[in-house]
Image (cartoon, rainbow, N blue to C red; front, side):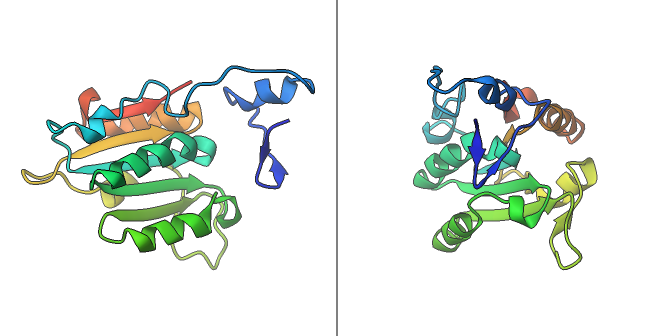
Length: 179
C-alpha cells in the first residue's frame, strides 16, 4: 500500500502507485534516486548559463523537484517552485515549504495553483495552461535565463512540454521527469 500523508493515494492512470498498490506485504522493489536521469551538473557547473530554475510539479511530482530545488539553493540559484494540486489540503509539506521560502526569500519563490480551490482561496486557480505560464514563469532576458523542470502525472508533464515549446523554450531549456 502506498501512503501519502494520512490518506491512501492511488492514481489509477499513474505509472507508479497502481504497481505499488498491487504489491503484497513483504514484497520488495528496487528504486533509484527520485531525480532519475536528471544531472545536477546543470545546477552546479561553472559553465551553466541559466540564472533561474523554475520547477513545475503536480501532486506527487513534487518528489524529485524538492531535491533539485535544494541543490539549486545551495548553489545560489534563484528558484520558482510552482505546485499544481486539487485543493489546499492536497499541498504536500505546505508548512515546511513556507518556512523554506521564508528562510531563502532572496532566492526562492513559490506559487500554488489549485484546480478545485475553495471560495476563500485567493491564489491561482485552474490547470496548467499557456496563459497561466506566461504570467507565472519568469521572463527571459539577456541578463536572465530560465531552466525548467517538470514532473507530475504523464498527461500534465506532456502538456507542460508542449506548452514550453509554444512559449519558445527548446529541449535544452528544460528537463521532464517521465516514468
